[in-house]
Length: 184
Image (cartoon, rainbow, N blue to C red; front, side, top):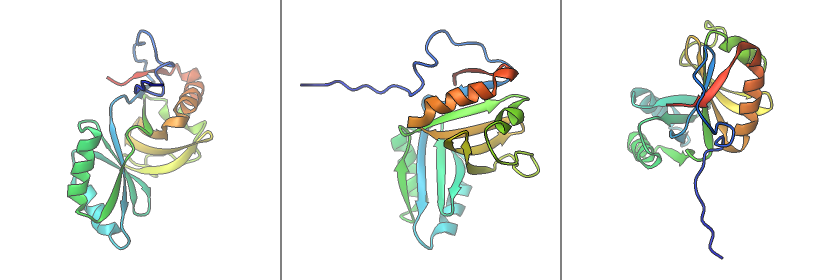
């Protein structure tokens, strides 16, 4: 028996239909980003961190000591892999996570109050400044949370929990008229 497999986004069924106009508080769902995990070899953590910090063409998110998530909106997964391998020159292991992760961008004036309903981190800008990232639980789902601006956050979640996280975020944002759609 021959089976045809096709790639579909984890939230296709949730976001099917005509796109809703973005409200003041909006949840944008990434559709075609390249995501990779970079794990420094023992003793190479500082060198790899400096190399990743020097690059401006992608976003680097701290995940754990010696481990980062790298997000590119311009590269293909293969292109990001090649770029990271050249940048880290054998000092790190690079694993493509593009099909295994879903990106959520939450923006708007109520983002702090929305996230406070499900994330146990102090999100005050003096503590969690733009550019900061950390692993956290959002409800019951493990995410990598990054502050990308004053009122914007990025959440990276495992694909298998994307639908559950989406439902949780929409429930958390209901009183703030949170809208959602695939990103541009």
